[in-house]
Length: 196
Image 1 (cartoon, rainbow, N blue to C red):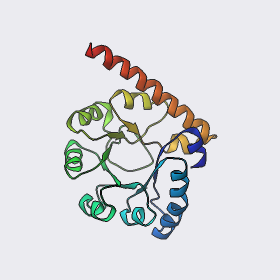
Image 2: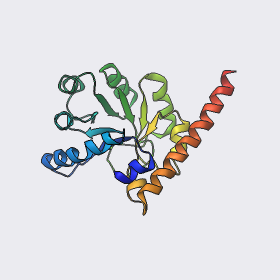
Image 3: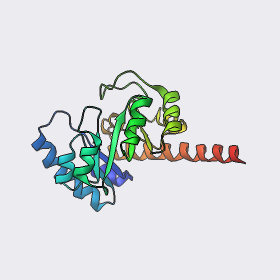
C-alpha cells in the first residue's frame, strides 16, 4: 500500500478471498491507519463487521454478501457502501438500496475474479445512463484498457493485477493515474464541445 500511496492512489479496497476472517481483520487494522494518515479512503471487501471494527471508511459488498440495509445499520450513514453489480437490474437495485457507489463489470476479461460474462464498455455506458451514483469499472482494467473505461463514462476504475504484478508497483500506479487523468481531460474537452 505504501508504494501506491506514494504514487498518489487515494482509494483502497482490501480484498482477501482466501484469508481467515482473523487474518483479514489483523491486516485491515494495519492498513486503515496507513491510508488515513495519507488522506486516502480505506474500504474493506465483503465484511461489514470488520470494516466497523477497524473504523474503515466503508465496505464493498458483493451480490452474495450482507444485504445493504444491514450493512448500513451496522456502519451508519457516515460510511461508504459500494456494491458489485453485473446487470442493469442489479445496478438499479443497489442504487435504490442506498449504495454510495457501484462497481460494474467485468468490463473486460479478467482472471482475478469470477464475476460472470464480460459486459463490455457499451454496457458500462448504459449503466451510467440509468444510475446517478458513481460507477466504478471493474474487471480487466489495465494501462491499455483504462482509457476505454473512462471514455465510456466510468467515474473510476478498480485495478489489481496490472499494478500489483508489475515489477515496480509505484511506477505502475503512477502510469495508471496519468492515463486516467489524460483520458479524463480528453473526455471533459469532448463533452465541453458537445455542450456548446
